[in-house]
Image 1 (cartoon, rainbow, N blue to C red):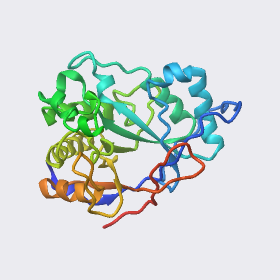
Image 2: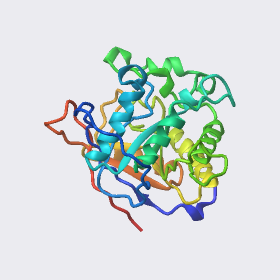
Image 3: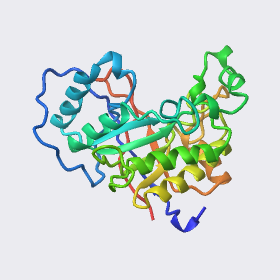
Image 4: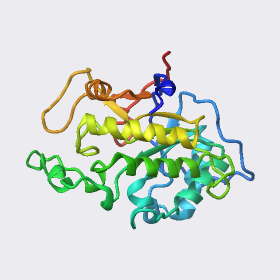
Length: 283
């Protein structure tokens, strides 16, 4: 890995609840320019989530995309799930609904943050079943698609393929060339439910994923997964630990490009608590 590219950068994302029902909203009449400047306000939109197929349908997703822009949302945070994109086997890609929904999101004027996460069955660690049940007696269980990949280079191939498709340069792009300008490697790996693995295993996919993303789009921002932070040292011994403590162990294992932190506080008006933090950079 070329460490000359490793400029520590903290991309701390403001994450809020997305209102899914605010009444009819007219779609924008013409494509807008995607947001380019990272600001303080964005939303965990999940327009590409497969659960929206049955819960909202395409017309509902279209309304949600328009509703977010009506509310002034500039940045959408989306999952580009490896477990869904390459589910059928190595090299067999399923690009819908990701292509069409990212195109609609881009044409509405959102900047897009893409999360690169989950693992298809063919690429998971051999002991995935044992891992996801390790803390089951304490009520902690992960779904199998959150298991780490057995080979970080398989993860790197996925990252490179996806980043190239959504780099917006007109070469080997998705239809309409939507641009994903910011990438995060996984999400909340300091929780066993979303990373039944070790900090060292996460560091391995972070290093491989960072290099792969930069090889496909050298101008993209690439950061760690968001980790939740309480006091910097907390750990419960059933698969959960403070994000700063987790990242300390990641940094000790490998050099990393940047960190995404989510200090935890509740929002009374939302149906569930979500992490909130400001945007800042260092060095």
